[in-house]
Image (cartoon, rainbow, N blue to C red; front, side):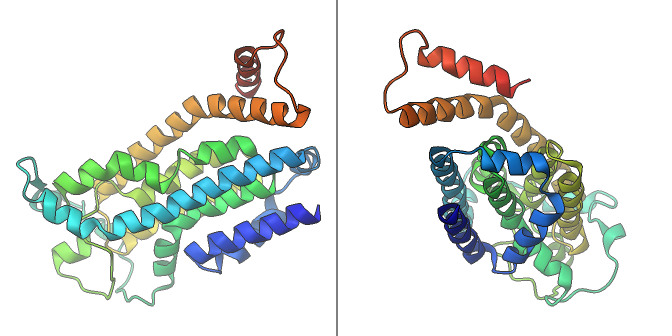
Length: 296
């Protein structure tokens, strides 16, 4: 148990380095509020090999998030290249021409970079799934961990990148000339809203958990989506596109996660036994059995 605790502390510190050490307090708050007896039973029943495998999956999620950060920091250069392509579309005038598309009904007051909801927006982009991943790791919930591989900034980036490069949509505040001190990587990467897609897909995934966790995560995700409109960053259509993308990622996660989970389960079984599976139970049959169990 001491080794597992140290694993958890190291992973939490690594995640916090990426999204801010305040996230540790969110993790500590989540655990006592949402962990149930079945989660404790699952933790106690998890073997050392399964913990090692779960650690590997979580590290992949964290590393993919870090890689994605550097990818988006370089998108000014990508846009300079995209603007020279014949299929580049400037959609700013179109976005601004749609009534109420600027989300003005959510503009509750004037803004500054010290607005408390600004931190929700900045940290929430990555925290919404990295914190969830740490929670799933702590509770030994491999099914959720693997699904979070598909609800991930890097996966979103691959799907959304063509829109970001060739469908030019500036942030609302820059289009209407409202300078409130926001310093983004770029103002050209609006449609679809990745803040919305990540938060919404995590919200859908949270519905598979217990009611306390689903309620907590639902409120957290809804707050992130709200800030994109409140801070004059995303258009309403950006948010709508993000909702569609989030649902697609959630569908992909549910479609492909059982196959990966089955492979990991077979791998753990082989490593624990120290030998290959007998011919009477080939790997394909073992995978099929695990997939059927997960889909019940």
